[in-house]
Image 1 (tube, rainbow, N blue to C red):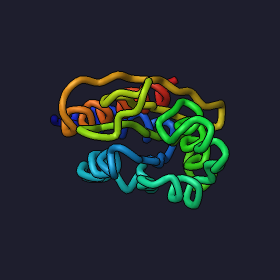
Image 2: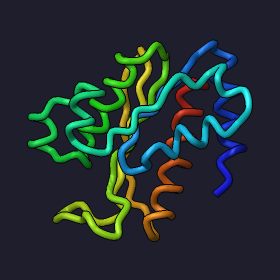
Image 3: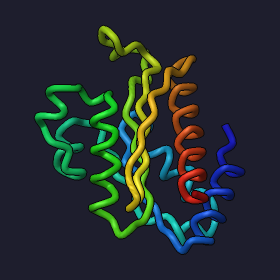
Length: 159
């Protein structure tokens, strides 16, 4: 999937506001950061990425409470929100995005089939989350997650 058009829109929106962003990623393993930094000039607006694949990494790097992880599981609205808030608090940015999900082919649990993804984005004005159920194999789920994250970032930066 070609993310460059969306990344360029995001770059324009962030530059127009003088904002920088961070990404907190689990199921995408750094693909959002990679998509952003693939475009020349991204150092103007992309600050950092947190790849927090394990629950311990979510707790250590983003401050996600272990009790939250235990109660709701890593793939949940609550954890996505906490990841986005943690990234916003731990980086000198005005916009953060977080993704956590089950890309497959394994990992499904009752109520959370393969393709379940939670996406959250945060600014100083607040944090929002969206649940997605994405079709396809592991690569398709991860690519669709990156595309959805970029779209929410663009919308948030333009708001």
